[in-house]
Image (cartoon, rainbow, N blue to C red; front, side, top):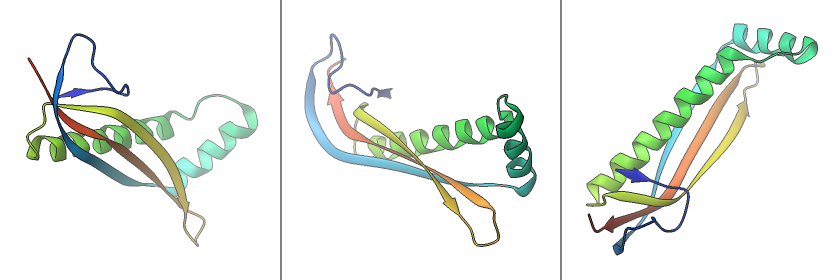
Length: 109
C-alpha cells in the first residue's frame, strides 16, 4: 500500500478514487511518564517515553487507515493528514489521540 501526503503520485496514474479513509488510535500515557515528562520540560531534554507512545499511536492510525483502504480495493492512499490531540482526564492523567485521514485510490502499476 502506497501512502503519501501529496495529492498525486509521481510516475503513477490514478485510475479511480474510492473515497475518504481514516484510522484512529487513542493511547493512555501513564502517570509516571507524565511526571518524568514534566521534569524534562523544566530541565530540558527529550521525553523519550512520550516519543515512543506517539510513534506507536501514529503507526497504529496509519495501519488502520491502510486496512480500510485495502478493504475498499485501493492500492494507495493520497493526501494523508495526521492530527495529534491530547485528552485530559479529570484525575490529571491524559490520553493521546492520533487520527490519520486520506483518500483511497487505485493507481496503475
